[in-house]
Figure 1: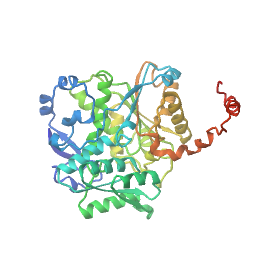
Figure 2: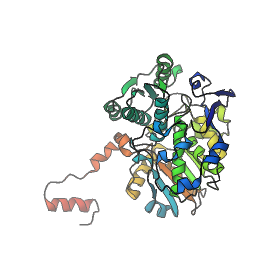
Figure 3: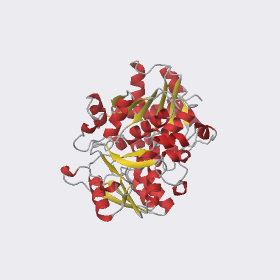
Figure 4: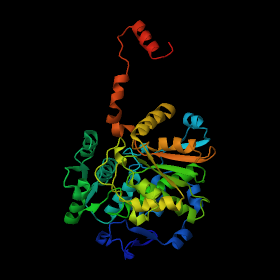
Length: 422
């Protein structure tokens, strides 16, 4: 693997090689350790600046795969960075951007980590790959397994939506809808997933960290792309929709990669945004807990942002480290404000994200209004998945459509009732 020396457990202080990583049982993600001196000597910023293409695998030497020939791709990355117009004007901001991760092939940012996880699994000779997921990671895994000819077995909660389960089956995955068990088991889909990989020898490729150290590295490309799209400058703030914590912590690692290479001169402050009903990372951050002592929540909290309702964040330690390292913040937002933010972003910017994908919008308004974010700051919000991923949340909007007979006078009357100029 280019520049990879070993894997390391910060809790047990143990080293692992690429073959023995499945033996780790501490419950925290192993860190991929790179030979930074060798990497710094061999990588040149001009090689990236001279290549104007912006795409995920452009940065493959910052990932742990051994050969470029191992790459499994469906065209992920290179997502648009759209400068806000109307919302920025309303807030008085001059540099507000939305990173449209919803334009990835499977519709979410999960394509970044999962593409690396699948490429690594194929390189290491695995035939069956597995994950536990509420939807987005399972969709990405199913897609990349279909692309590579590997088998995917994905575990989802029994309550997973029909649309998400149908997508997975269509992509060729074996889908296990997991029924609830005793509360002490925790998330039943994660519990059964863990038992399956232990008993059947499958490669775990979930989007969260402890079960596989490799796919986490793929999230770093989000940081690299933002820097390039901002003309090789880092923003002042990045507001992250946060569930398990992998997006936040992985993106921060990407910025540190280039900061340590002196390719950028500053680091953005990161903000973890979680639903009020399920905000263990925000709570732990605001209590200033040690990263390895963060507090889970009990039960199975509900939220309109279902992809963020993770009471046991497996990357919680990494997320807390990231917030501390960047002098960031943690904010909880209500379901009502999340839905208002979804509607506002769609109507003002033409960007349709799911509640999970746009939970940071109300946090933005709060931070601007209380003066935390200065009007001149450069702010980036990743819109992490597409609104079509969770269409049932807004299904009631169907009733707001105007029903009209094919009579122009009746149409004119109804349009006037809705204050539409005719």
